[in-house]
Length: 432
Image 1 (cartoon, rainbow, N blue to C red):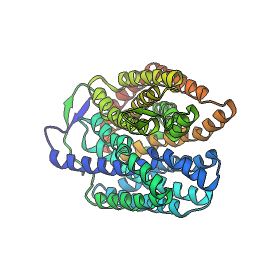
Image 2: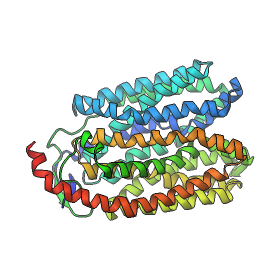
Image 3: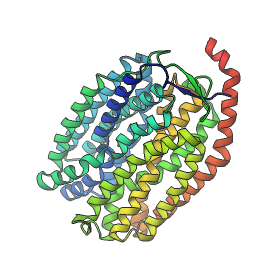
Image 4: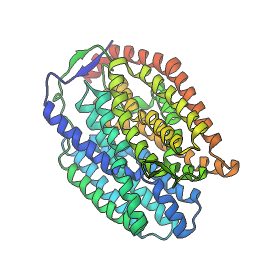
């Protein structure tokens, strides 16, 4: 049975950290495309009198293309090669995210808003898949931690810009905010991308570490898609993404439903502003933390702990979310327990199916987020019918509980069989 690889004793350790840091920076630069979106929703509604549900379709399109298009981006990155593939895909991503928000700044129609969401989604997907590929390929010895650091850039990055964005919207309007942040973010991603590459074959050397099991061979994407273990992992990913995306897209709307948006929560800071910053920080902290834990106790156990805590977090938000500090604390806990999936799932995918095609395979799994995004408008419809977010939060808590059982009783034993199977087919795969 195979074990985790380690590159710590050999290979270009200093260079790999440089690539990882640049990837984290790029993830920070695209973070507010998703996590800052909620502060644009109400200004857009006030400007054009559009329904919130209609505006949120743009968010759904963004998430759908950011995820469903990542296999295309990953395939191009792997196909072009480790030296130039990441630069091309990530650089084009920077151009597209700039174009999308510039379009959002000028459009006066929902169609234009949707096209902007599509452009930013496709571009962000390119940045995301290259960054995750950087982590899982350069760091086989610390895959959970490296994936967590990259994912943390996306999860916590918006904490650096959410207050400036909110202040600029209030002072200069949403259109000017879209425009200037588009140019800054897209331009910096384009520059950073030119200094990122993936390791050449054999560049990262392997030694044995028995803490975490790993596939003895690399599976191509066709083999991955034909594996039922992948689809168990995919279903778990969809379940966990759904609740977090609903809260992410509607944080401002949920606060408004409780009438606490502008209520001072702490030290003169309003509830929504404090919740936005705290949630993004907690989201970012969770990703490397849970990744580090997974590197030490294994992925299935870490998933069970994280998903179980998530169920508690949604239930607490249902119970005390109407109080300013309760809202801040509980949304932070929700984001903390949700953010871990973006380090745990790509690590699990690479451990199960190997590193050679890891960028494309992790991108295939990442499409689960796009599938889950289809539920975001549905949640808005449910709350409009019921008049509150209570039912949505309770469903999210139940989904987390279901995910705990799926991981422990289905995914864990299936992964064990997968590792055993890879050990028997490894020689044939290497000769091929």
